[in-house]
Amino acid sequence: MRTLLILALVAFIGAAVEGKKFSQCALVKELLKHGIPKNEMANWICLIEHESGYNTKATHRNTDGSIDYGLFQINNRYWCNSSGGPGKDCHVTCAALLSDNINASVQCAKLIKRRQGWRAWYGWINHCNGKKLPNVNHCY
Ligand SMILES: *[C@@H]1O[C@H](CO)[C@@H](O)[C@H](O)[C@H]1NC(C)=O
Ligand SMILES: *[C@@H]1O[C@H](CO)[C@@H](O)[C@H](O)[C@H]1NC(C)=O
Image (cartoon, rainbow, N blue to C red; front, side, top):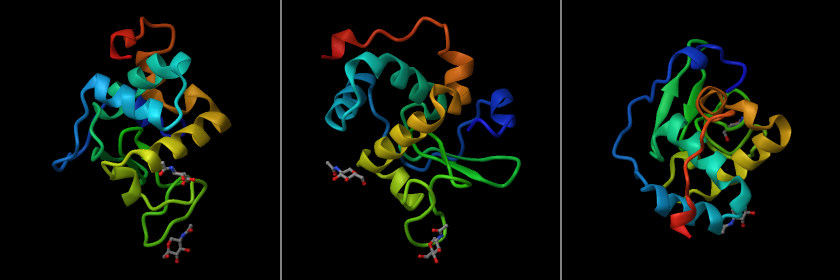
């Protein structure tokens, strides 16, 4: 996340324990189903590719001790509650952001983008902003 400078330097995807690893087109179809518009798709796919490598179970511990969860590497400092029940701004448990069912992750990622824009993600800033984006048209 934006506030965690270290992510700019370290594109590290933490201990992935048997997550669901989507193919690019399978993920495109899931994102569409959960309301991601086609005109944003290439940016989302680029972001997810660089944040989690399409792995729903990706986690990463930051230097401040906070943890990023799932496809979008959503941070538990602001967005999800890692201690028990749903909480923080997305009103979800962090565990829900590691589910093979991507709905909770997508809804939370949409909220983050509404609040902060694409720049909430260093993966996007470093690898997608102004770069050639993946062509996902063959997936539709
Ligand atoms: C996280 O969940 C626990 C257990 O349900 C709850 O006590 C706590 O208030 C929640 N934290 C936030 C920030 O919502
Ligand atoms: C996805 O999650 C949102 C927010 O939690 C919820 O309102 C919606 O019903 C869910 N949609 C599906 C298809 O599960």
